[in-house]
Length: 140
Picture 1 (cartoon, rainbow, N blue to C red):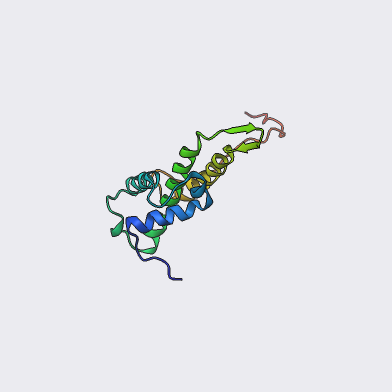
Picture 2 (cartoon, one colour; picture 1 turned 90 degrees about the vertical axis):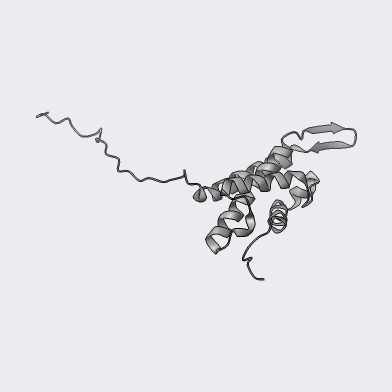
């Protein structure tokens, strides 16, 4: 299998749909669902482009895919937030499990996408502290 060299809106939405795996099915989404179309809009806005077809190169495609996963999971989490558990004589239905799974996957995808956020940075500082077990300096 060859890695993609570029995406169209259709192929990126298919990627997002497949990234959600069985959660797409649980939510009743297809690749043409309006929720995924809106998630694609969020990807474009986050990337800062109006057309996905101009994005090329390995590092740019990695960024695009990371943003696409994050926005797909955000949409799934938003959709599943209204699901609730219920019980009847047939048994217990725990629909909230979809939300819990989507929330965990969103957090992971958001963390993976952080490196592409211009506002994200990591700083290293030296911390100096006084040892509380040393006797105080008599000359001070």
